[in-house]
Amino acid sequence: MRVLARISLGGLLFSSWAQNFWGLSPAIPQSQVLGVKASELLRPAESMVQRNNIGNVAAMNSNLTEDSALQWAKKDKRRMLHVVYRVGDLDKTIKFYTECFGMKLLRKRDIPEERYSNAFLGYGPEDSHFTVELTYNYGMDKYNIGNGLRHFGIKVDNVAKAVNLVEAKGGKVIKEPVLFNGSSKVVAYVEDPDGYKFELSEEATAPEPLHHVMLCVGNLDRSINFYRKAFGMDLLSKQDNPEYKCAEVTLGYGLEDMNPVLKLTYNYGVTVYDKGDGYAQIAIGTDDVYKTAKAIKLFDGMIAREPGPLPGINTKITACLDPDGWKSRITVRTIGRRTDDAPWKPAREIGKLKVVYLEAVLCGLDSRCASFR
Image 1 (cartoon, rainbow, N blue to C red):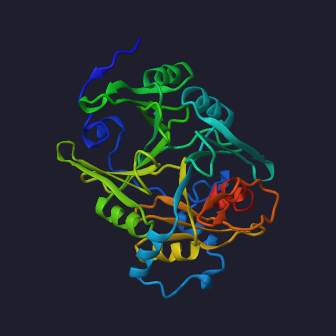
Image 2: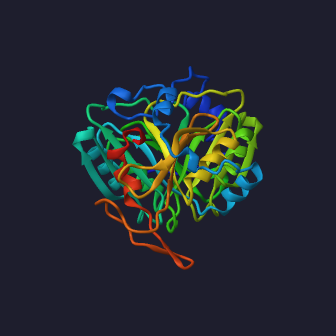
């Protein structure tokens, strides 16, 4: 039986505790991982960016100003689609997530010609919920998680039960269940068999159980400026904790209790983190990849793949790096008929239009564009 301790967790996520526990000391910067085949996992970002600069740049609106870019980012119907990372044993991780976290396996596929498999897991349909995309590259059974990815946040019905399951199923309990900051909110911190960390918080009826991704950044104001302007995210909260020598912000599309969010942490004096080679990216839906890419360039982002259509697929895609080198993939929502055999999700009504999220963007593109795994 686990006993909940009433302690203050105001600084649990922050620097003083994190420096000792997570090992968040300044690290030698690694090349940003943009490729995913086993032979390409440590390919420098610059070469991958150069490789991916393919056509269609002319389709971008060259007259987009900062003001019009800001207006576009706010008008664009964006949504966080899924988070992508690599694991050493796909079936083992699927079993762990379904049994310990209560996720459902939404889709799984093997692409032997590209030597990888992937699976999508989550708490609801992909066209309305934030999901996890797991990638297994043949022959790769271990990844460096680094210290820049802090954790993923999940809301569960019973934290103590989930923690017991994690321990029983081969995971690691980092922080036993506690009452957060003297409130009635129960939280715990655990680690999956690959070393990815999760914050578990107790909420029985959460509309979006896969709640957040937390990343470390070297300049919080710079990151806020980028994600608000280039990505059109709202700044939902900001907290400075000088006693723990850190600060944290929450950004997203819509209210935090209803939608997945991005959390960014700045630890005083730490400007560089080891990103490792396990975490890949967050995927975000957009109405126009060309305008989105232009806005990203205007606000200090770096385009990792120029916007344009994927060969044989009726959709467009771009990818970028934020000022700290964290990668995001931007995919357009497609109206019309599919051009390949990838399965589709049902259309959902937006005004008088039926907008369809192309399944090929969510999973099928990997077999056509390996640099996005």
